[in-house]
Length: 95
Image (cartoon, rainbow, N blue to C red; front, side, top):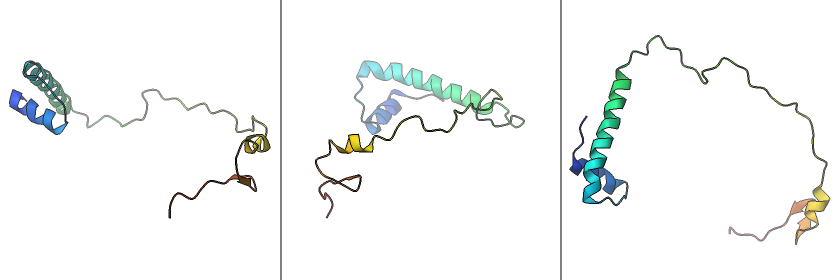
């Protein structure tokens, strides 16, 4: 697929990008090459390819689910200007 300089200017306008006249020709060439590559990739036969989330067949190592920190609620609440029943009190912002 070949993009013209006018096509690139329209795309730049829609994307709210400011490009100069000298950049338009280079961008049209680069974008045309990218679209040609996408067309080549779409032409590849992937009917027998199994979709996968990761190229390696490995299980994810998980850490043990255990408590690693002590309860410091009182320490954190001591800096609060207003607190009640272990909760921070804040001014109402939505009416």
